[in-house]
Length: 150
Image (cartoon, rainbow, N blue to C red):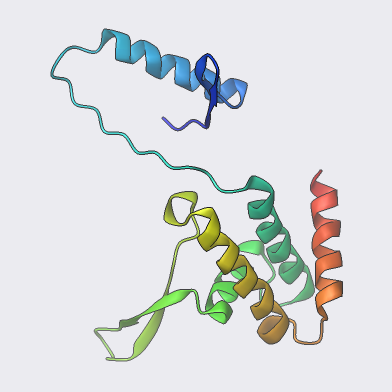
């Protein structure tokens, strides 16, 4: 079960009706759980949602502005590589160094780390992927994508 919860004066509540339903089901299971039953939990504090969507707007701009990285998924790989958001590994077959992309999942990075990644990604797009585009144009295109999603 995954659910986004919000602390309210009454306690934890789901942030959407679906999240509230999942949280209520979980709370009921806790009530009937027998002593000695094990439960594994993970929790994280989510990042700024609008900032996360801005990254995907940036990726959409890259996808629409290039032929090689024509989907947001391909754009994300290119942006991570261009921003250096990867670790080096040794290919056991060739002995060559290959990049291993790092994750941007909510669980993999907090908001402060995401802000640094976004700044590096934005700069990498301007310097490596779309070098003919200026900063103001890229910001304007990102805003247009975000407005289209609203």
